[in-house]
Length: 147
Image 1 (cartoon, rainbow, N blue to C red):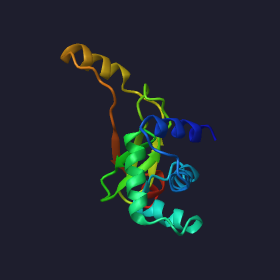
Image 2 (spheres, one colour; image 1 turned 90 degrees about the horizontal axis):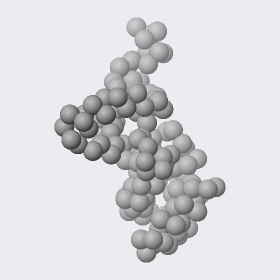
Image 3 (tube, rainbow, N blue to C red; image 1 turned 180 degrees about the vertical axis):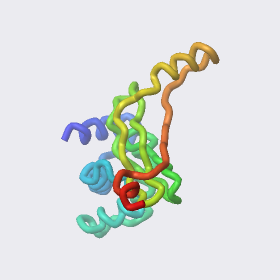
Image 4 (cartoon, one colour; image 1 turned 90 degrees about the vertical axis):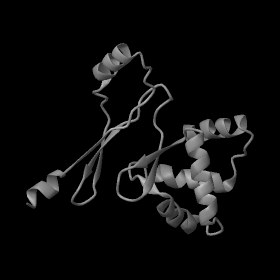
């Protein structure tokens, strides 16, 4: 896949190698796109294919991939730090999340509807916005029907 060569380039620029462990961890995250995995969940999946990889390696690799802007770190207020593969090129904002307070379902919102608000903030406060994160909490369609 294309992301692997991109990751390899980013690693090389920082003096790191694209090790089999890093490759296995990255493959797990990409195979579970949209699932917002925690480090422990990544470890559970990666040890199936690569039992020699330890939890500490997963923690270190995930942190490195966040620093390289390969993964996004998400705090969805559920007690876990979660990760997902970045699908932007560094110039675009991340997508937003709708989080069901009842069942925990996470729905991704791809549209960025905040551009006019950002422009107003940048103009009014002379502040250059580079990114934003937005989370909405409520009830998903299924949980609304179960009320």
